[in-house]
Length: 167
Length: 208
Image (cartoon, rainbow over all chains, first blue to last red; front, top):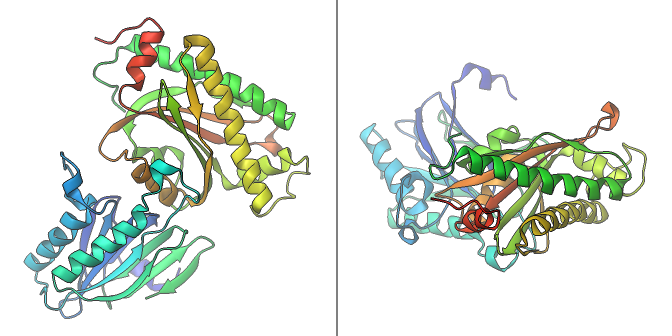
């Protein structure tokens, strides 16, 4: 890991959760499989948010205990909170990571490719809210760890073997 | 790790005992397959949110292999075997009759070897439950993933629709006595709602 990482606070974002940080904090979420990590960044206030989405659509569930689990509820929620902390929705830019299909040859009951649906729904919600998606690293069949650097909005993606990619 | 409110300690003991017998049977089959003695810890039966299974096994970014097998019939559910990477490669070597350390990557043959291990273990487990309870269960084709633990487990959880509930988790660790050849794996059985009731009824323990 680069030396800069040590001097910055790294905040972990759990499954079906979100966190917001300010420059120079870093937000990290580990092991995204079919889940989608949505990073949101306001370059002016240098405020960043990271959301770990598990499922696309909350309307298919009767009992929603954790809105951050769903793309349709989690994205508006985190944007609203960023706004209350000083970010402007007009400046926020998004990046998407994850949405993989981890198990190949899934049986009938499991073929509903959630990874793809998580990605699609996140794009749809962001579009509806007028938030541009600057870059994406989605699909495929590998797990990914995602790190948002609030100093510049850069997202680092780590896959197995410690390969790093920055978007 | 709270127990299910409707289940008494007698029920939990019964679950543990069933798992013990089922896994004992499964390990005998695995031992025959690899021609080595394999041990296990006493199974633990608990109700926990599926998310917590990741913490039980290891770190989110740890490389693991996971065989998952869907069970249909009287006690529908999902059976999972998770092996850390080193153990996965050792298992392949054992199955292929190779010196430990020969396998360094999971090629197609290695992948089917790991899936076969899952198949044999599950078949024996289900067979043991059948001989105890006459409950019939069928296992589907095994699915394999090998990647970061967090990515594998959350994807499974989502794909199997186990997002909102607490699940019954029967967990054990498999290992081999010879230190240089140690294999450790975790076994989970996630039952669907209603399955447990049928299992207890068959054992003569009704649920209140």
